[in-house]
Image (spheres, rainbow, N blue to C red):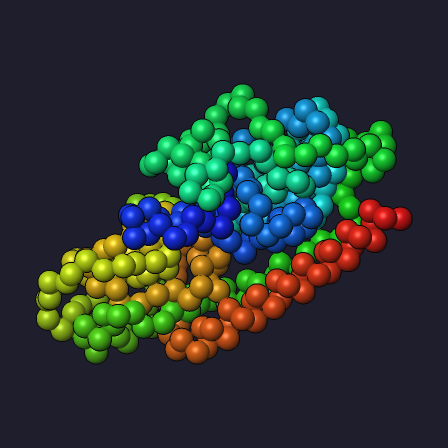
Length: 318
C-alpha cells in the first residue's frame, strides 16, 4: 500500500520518473466522489489489502478494483461517498475484479512532499509517508477534521445517495489501443501483422515498472544498435528475445530497446487493472484518434465532476 497521486513531472531529465498512480482515472474518480481535487493523494492497494481502523469520523470513496470492501461486515460499493464513524474498520474480503483499488479521504491525508509531489518514491525513499510502503500499525493523519455526526447518527456507516458511473470510462475491454512508436518500422511485415492479431499474456514478472508479455515472438528486419532514448508510461519495447515489455508508472526514464509502439493514454487505466496471466490484444490507431479518445474521456470526467459537485452542494447545504 502506497500513497499516490498523479505523479512527479519535470524531473525526467534528471533520471527521476514521474511515478504516481497506475490507474489515474480510478484515482481521480475516487477523489471527485470524495469531494476532493482530482490530484489529491490516495492510497493505492493491491489484494490482499490492509484493514483500516478509523479513529475519527471520516468520509471516503473507493475506486478501481473491486476487493469486496466492508465496514464492520456491511458491504461498501465503489465510487460512492461513504461516511464512517470512528472506531469502525474498513476491510477487503476478496478480489472480484481488477488489480488496484484506491482509497480517497475527504480533505486528503497529511503527507511529506518531495519535488512538488506527495507520491511515494520507494527508490529515492522520499514522499508520501516517510518514503516507504505503509506498514502494520501505521497511523495516518488527515489534513482536516470534519464533523459528520449529523450524517451517521447511531450507525457505523452511511452511504450517501449517489454513485459515479465509471463504466463509461472502461469501454474498450477487448483491446488495448496503441500508436506506432519511433522504431515501429524496424519490425518485419509479419511482425507488424502479429502485433495486431496475436494475443499476448501478462507474465508474473510484471510490476509497477513494467508488464512483461508472453506471446508471438516479433522480429526486426535487421538487428541495430540503438542510442538510449526517452521512454514514457505506455511505451512498448521489443526485447532481444522477440518478446514485449510495456513500461508502466514506475518506468525508467530512458531505454535502448526499440520503442515499437505506445499504449494510448486513455487506455492506460484499463491496462493498469489487468493482472498476471490475463491476455492483451492490441488495436493500432493513429495519433489523431488517440487524441480524440483522450479528449472525450476528459470531457466525461468533467461531466462526472460537475454532477458530483452539484450533489455535494445540494446535500451538504440542505
